[in-house]
Length: 172
Image 1: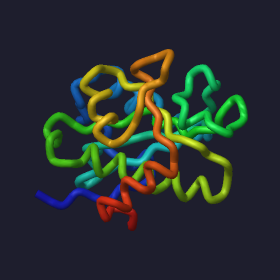
Image 2: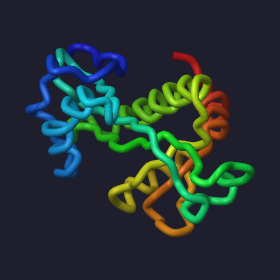
Image 3: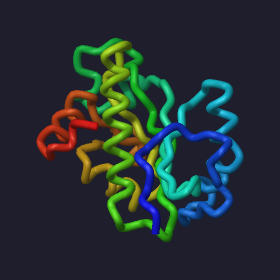
Image 4: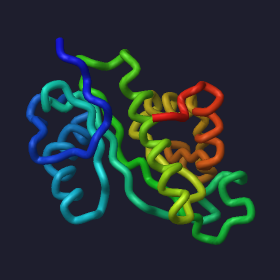
């Protein structure tokens, strides 16, 4: 089998037709919205692929959370609302799950967010987990739940960067 490409921007040249992650909303979003959102500028999608066949992806967008939605360490000394990057989607094709691709995609999303935070103010990364299993994945990586929505999880950019550094994963 050919190697999996490093994460790169999704384009119309990618084959999305075979992607099935087990969560229909994530499959549909990839096929119907990802390229359109890229063109409109509402989000940026990054994919890993084998010969153009997408086997995993994630999407980033700008956002904000109110102090009421944010855990203490996110809102501390911050304006209301708090500037965040939204990790809007992250999925891996079922045939490739369990191989560390999801963790690799999350790492790439954190590295890109760290880069963006050097240009514009970003306090945290926000994700809306679709299930308890997804919530557990993010909690393993240091994300903490919102006090008002247990499936909305956040991590400060500084904490995410530190986590990668401690694991030796902070370089591209």
